[in-house]
Structure formats: structure tokens, C-alpha cells
Image (cartoon, rainbow, N blue to C red; front, side):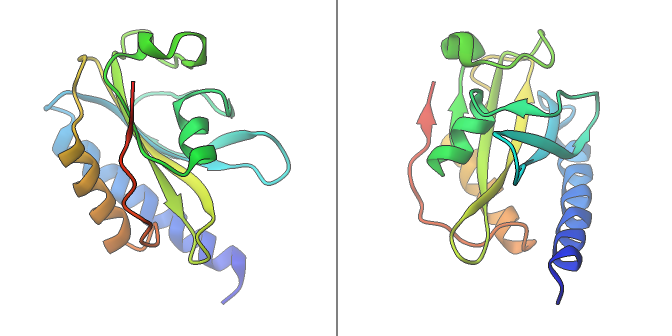
Amino acid sequence: MALAQVQGNRHRRMGEVCDVLWRFFKDQGVSWVGFYEKDDDADQMSLVCSRDKPACSPIELRGACGMCWEKKRPIIVNDVHNLGERYIACDPKDKSEIVLPMFNSDGSCYGVLDLDSFDRNAFYEHDLIELRRLMESTAISWPAPHIPALIY
């Protein structure tokens, strides 16, 4: 199967998962959900799909998404102010977020899943476990070592 076809199928699944996550969590504190992929030719990430408001794209690798991609570790941000200058504010009303790395079959990280909330302390380790299961069961991400999240 050609790389473009594999990515196209993966992008379609990402869009479907975005829709499902938004439908089920928009009334439970999630203010935004989206996938970013690392650009091959630049130190930035570009938005693949999102729900339900505009998002920054491309974004620098200095933010939570970039740190997640670089470290290949999930990140739970209890309060975005804890990131200081590393925080990329697409919506100034967001207070917390959870970011999971997405892996290729060779173990390389190609992108991230990002969920934001208007509430502080909105995400927990349990959310991380369930989101990871969803990413693996939908073949958006290959299984990865279960490394504890970085918490900010």
C-alpha cells in the first residue's frame, strides 16, 4: 500500500475519532479536540483535523504538543499557566489539556492527539489510558511503551 494511501486512511480515521470524542465529551468539559502531525521538512506541527473551533496551525514544537512529540511521552497539563512561555494559546479560555503521542509501526512518533478544557485539572491518568486504547484500537497509533505522563 502506498504511503499516501496509508496516511489518507489514517487521516480519515482521525477525523472520525475527532467527531466521536467531541460528540461524547463536549458536554463534559472538553473544549477542543484535534490531531497534529509533525511536518517532515520543518520544526513545526500542522493540524490534521479538529473539533469544534479554529485552532493554531502550524504550531512550534515548544508547546505541549511539540514536547509530547519530542519526548514520545503523554503530557497532562493541569493548568496551562504551569507551562509559562512554552504554552501556545489557541484559545485563552483553555485551562488544561492532555496530549498523547501517536506512533508508526517502527516506533517513531508522527504526531499527537490533543484535548483541551476550559476547566483546570480536567484530565487524569485514567483518561490517558482510555485514549491510548482508543488510538490503538482504531489503528491511529501503534502500541507504545506505557510511559507515565509528564504532568504540569
